[in-house]
Image (cartoon, rainbow, N blue to C red; front, side, top):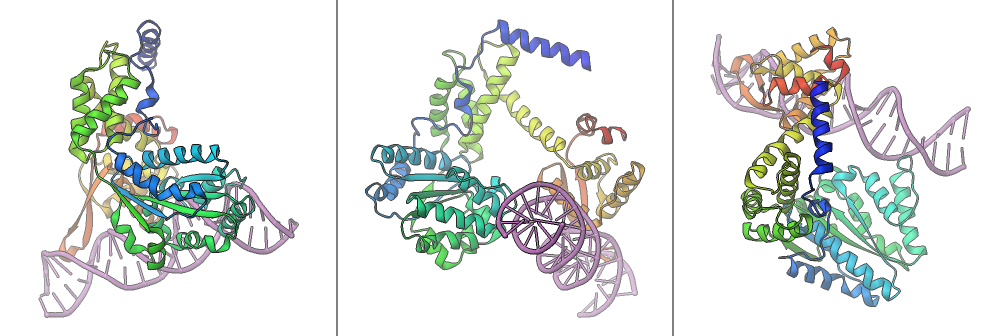
Length: 399
DNA sequence: CCTCCACAGGAAGCGCAGGAGT
DNA sequence: ACTCCTGCGCTTCCTGTGGAGG
């Protein structure tokens, strides 16, 4: 195995040295790249601009809610408009700053505020302070340097679902504590229903203005991919068919531009690795599989030990098992390799996490008199799991 | 129609890590 | 040195439940 991977590594390097690269600028296909033009979003850009424009002559502006499914350009458009706004503001010597936080990536209220503090150039420890303390520091920073802060909360639905609307409530009424500065909110969500979880006062304040981002059509995706591929690839290194296929595949989901761009980027990598002069349809098809496989490997690798053991006890049995049987197998394995056995409640939690990751499928069955249980089926290949798990010394001892 | 199995999954809380302020 | 903060993984305790057998 060592030899083989060394050889292919050699291949990769020699090819990189001898062969020409297909990419002019790979970053143009990354999801956080913000292009200088955002096609098919002119209306949304104008609306957001109109909402924020009052800030430029020192007036207040409405808070804003942005809706749209994943990959419809919400984040890119918001960041784009704010960048333009900051440029305009700095030429006029207005103190307008913006802070961005993705609440799902941040994960907790504390880290959300931590992100905000970072954007403002405040130094705050990444743990240790009370949430209220960080909040107070941010408020006083806005007040003392008399700035206008535009706070973008991406995936705001995550925050609301997991932590309720307390923090949002505080944020919406923060202006009352701000005699000098000003705080404005932009919420971004891909779930329309999250409003139900909001206190009416918060809701009315937050959604003074609402903008909806529709999914891209397949035609629009195609045009976007053409634009980006011109920046990303050298001339004549990508076929029309490949681009069309990427657009069609992503379009059949729900017009997810991020997925389309990912697909195109990976297709390019596949073609490059193969030493092909052009990206073609077959590279896209390989890329689809590769993305899926990479996702699996990542998921498997980052599993905590207990989850690995649990997954192994499911997969190595080969057949569908009930929760009780799995727990039995799991605790046996734990004893064998001298690892602490977790409670069934916790294991049931880990199990639903595995389900969520798509590593196993479960379905609830009732056997009447003989109880109610989940039937658990592995949804990945045993050999594949074995390969990934063998990297882990503890799991390796199990084979 | 009732019962009762074998779990699901919610709620609360514990102990620890990692840090701040005093 | 001491108290107080939050997040995280986990346990304990709990209530809920579809349907075969009585």
